[in-house]
Length: 291
Image 1 (spheres, rainbow, N blue to C red):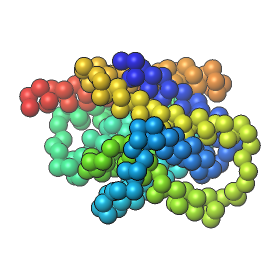
Image 2 (image 1 turned 180 degrees about the horizontal axis):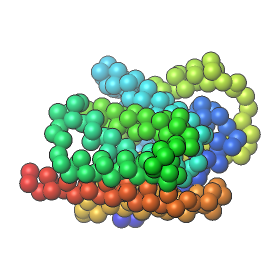
Image 3 (image 1 turned 180 degrees about the vertical axis):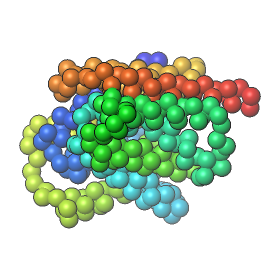
């Protein structure tokens, strides 16, 4: 519970950290610098564990898997997500990105051969109704989306993240070893994109500090804390339920740290999204009980 709560509390801060960092950095630059900090952190963790040498002993297939996974995450996922945060208020981007679990269940149907159940349909309707409420700032009849491109990018990020996790299920390596190799393979893509499509220059100190925070906690330390929580948990279901604290706490931090006035539509939409995720989780537990 301690590891799980620590991970959730840190995750709750990252939407604010994204938005504050993007005041000083372009999305590609935030990805480049935060990815560098995360890579150093993961490398340091493996040094402490005595596992760093494992990154040089992967099979050709595993290196090929890391090339694909590194392209998806961190390169494409965070590039798209940071751009969404750059365009949208944090209070909109964060809940929209939170629908990735629904996207994952939808992609699992064609990619993993899973069946689409009625409970999942209810979860989908609830969550995407929340998306519409948040994206239109409550103007659901007029369907007047405040920033259509930002909304599309936030939803596309959920597709990329879901694909990453679906392909990641086939990776049998130590999770931290695999994640570090993925980050190393993604670095040429991130650097190449920054050199080709942006004006890469020395970042201002506040931006660099923000990137250090994002890379250290969002991309690195939270992942390790969550792995530890799941490893030591007496009940993984209890730990998983902690996730639902994060989006609401995140809105509080967005208000006080970023200075956004939280709209009633955001709260209504977030409640719908979380309700959909809860319905989905009840369905998963019922299926597991029958199995």
